[in-house]
Image (cartoon, rainbow, N blue to C red):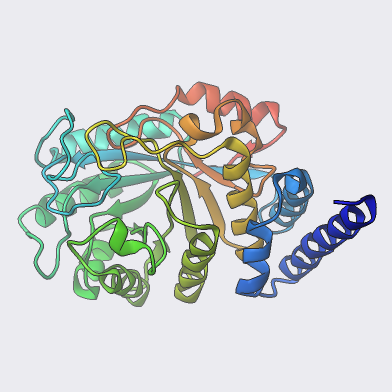
Length: 342
């Protein structure tokens, strides 16, 4: 490539980033084509992209970082065949398997999360869900735990119980749930490569049911599972249509015994690019970096906020360990950012 050609390419790339930043600053929608063009930019433009995403984050979210924590309240024996999941009955992993935890243990988990700086706490159970073909025997136990949690701990309450309908969402809201989490995982076009035991539209319907019940919706996906740049953007625009409140971005941490055990983790720069593009697509939404942060971002974890995230998870994940919460709290302080209160 000649110097002239390189100069033209650089100029076009910077113009694209500036255009997308300008649209985001005005809370005007990027086109899907523009977002794909950002995703296909050479990694040498990452710092220009990060700078734009950071300015958008500051405008809409300021310098406050939201921390959330989860509890694996029912582990393993999930009938779904998600390729990345260690809790799937089709995986050959050595995870702990147990039925729904007692309300007391779930409440204690919330108290521990609050001590670690979390303002949001999610109860997560393995399984299809609590509507349709899913078993309902644990729903009453979850509701008991939620009611106890509401009366004893001043923390925002979230649940992630799989596929549900509006009736179940309303029952959870009445018990104290404020936000419901349900990931699409990936693009509609790629989903059959990852899961064959339920249809993508069931996930979409769950998010709609949650919104119809008057709950906040937390919906994102996982990257590094074989999807293309175009499919990363495709998922983003499906989520945009659903008008969710929070978008968790997970990065594959390959677990031995799953179908994706040999997948290569995403490079840190690639992860930062994904975060930045999602911030430009979702200027005023919460962008949360969740599972796989330590494995994929390594020494660049501190750059997730500059790349546009305004939230992250602290503590452990479902079947893998996070790093000590005090390290994340110190990282946020060192960056001159503040932690959101309850």
